[in-house]
Length: 526
Image (tube, rainbow, N blue to C red):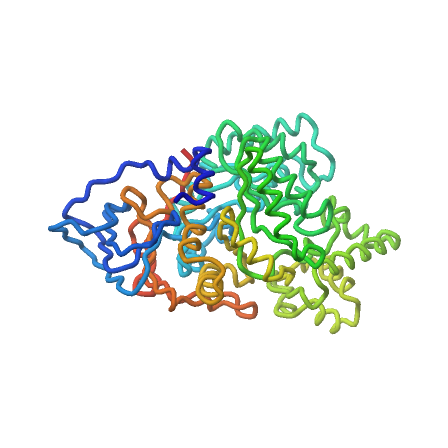
């Protein structure tokens, strides 16, 4: 039976590019033959015992081995499962492409989890020169495939800087042209991060007018929505805003790293999912992605500073903080934001510049106690000194995480960023904790949410499935051996347990050991 998400995607035409490619004819010579494993197709189908034959960068067959087949390399997968490579639809693993060094471009933090394809441009930070960025990245070498979203934040910053003013008609026209150009060059959609400065200053109508320039090209409106808590318009109104922007612009709405953040929102996952269901009943295409961690990751200023105080940049913030009346208002707003997040003991300082080193691994409470000041005063002092470090904010509860996870329209993502273990450990954690130990979802559902469902949502042609004609992004692993090694105190430890990871038919992980392969491709929307 077709799953709910698959049925909805098929009705909107988003699956045809994935499932209708003509099968290749099996011949007697293969590059890789995987035998003896339990195959999960990536579409949520019942797993079966089957062989997988690969020639070049494509899968030739999934099933019985044709008589007379000869393979250059054979992989014995007895006692293990064989799945499509995972596709991470919300991560910062490749942020900064194509300027990243070779080690970063290898992307071992993703590969050792089984991730073979990652997004570029989450939170509205996607490139404008999509063609040039992808071509340069491909030429420099990629460990994993990548596809790009262009960024609402990028275009607004280019046209308006850090201004909090409303966009003029001329500025909107300029931003629309930049979005259209990026889509023409192969972007798979538009990302936004309306929680972040300066994107947060844009009204709903401004975002809608700009993003709708992508309508002729189709694709996804992916968003770190304006409010996941009770900061401004509130979680429910923010969810409706995100859906309106996607639906009225003719794009699929993807609510990135969906959550109910902070004490005011705990227990509200069902209400968010109901808003999404109501929108689908009206004909809108609405999905989400999620990571399985109780701590989010963001910047110290993003977590605590009110947006009015950040308008104009750091110099303007310093002037406001120097004024006694504005400083009092600023600190009061910061105290309220800290309350929303659960207090000073819930903010763990995880990364930053060289000056941040003495604070890494400490909670805001510990930093404040050492300074002998209230927590918000200590945080403001750090920001004003330019030590605006990243934080892991423990602001979610298991009940909401599990409720979102069970929904058939929620995909798996990492939101991987430096200093948080999710960059290195999300997919093993979800398999271990939520499939094997509790369990919350089935292995079939886990694999689909991390592969075929993502490919169908974004229109990644011939990715995310094990079938003849698909690209040979393939995993072989024993789920019982899969381990998340990264922790909040040691966030950069590579995951273990992936035995084989093939990217476009080339082993990137072989017998559990990473190779030096750079077999990833820069993908462009057709």
